[in-house]
Image (cartoon, rainbow, N blue to C red):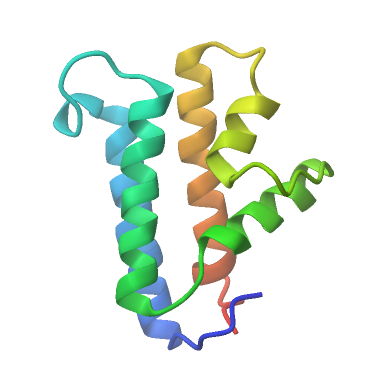
Length: 120
């Protein structure tokens, strides 16, 4: 799925750190955001976090997470990025539900590629 190799111990550590951050974001969003908590604010934060991981680890996460989500929901949409696709796919849900879904999906993706050691 991802072209770069990450050592197993490093992958687990990265997953654990990311998962702790995501759960903290869900439980204590005011630690991360001032003002109203919106899907766009969380999306922007997560996009920056993921972009930072891509840069630091020299791997391509965004295209892989989009493909992973498309396979998960069995809906292909190459014109939308991952978080925009999530927002569109779950548009019938409340803002708070979409935020939690986005956070949970990012955690699930990182568990899939890192903790389950399927990074190649």
